[in-house]
Image (cartoon, one colour):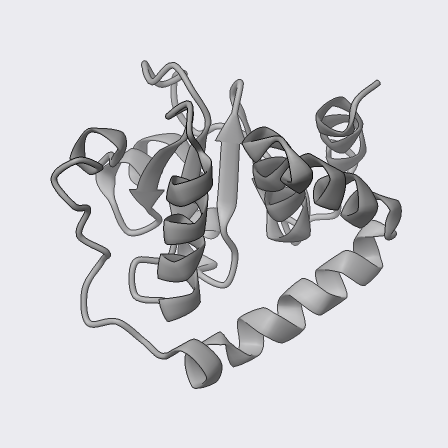
Length: 161
């Protein structure tokens, strides 16, 4: 079992606060790859999207703001209201908080897959504790944006509404 399979197995038993797996609120989407849902007003989230775009050389990842229509169609209301978490959506399952970070890094491959494996070894409650600490301080450390990140022309096709 690889990290992504183990991640999916462990998050299915998450608590009611949405610390792991997210159940779809709509029919599966037609995009043929994983989606990274991000807070469009968060400076750290914008940097995370930039980080992923630079390292996703195969163009497998799609990106959508949590405030957008794609998130509205796929994610439950409580997930869209909880803007303190990035959501990684793959194969009809959404992963939040540290599980989303691990899944994203695993998908990027290369050295990032090693980083994901190391993070996976840290118990999820401890990973999520660190994630929540960063999430609480992200606006102070990275600022708030007035609007969602606008993709450059060469990136436009990888962004969903």
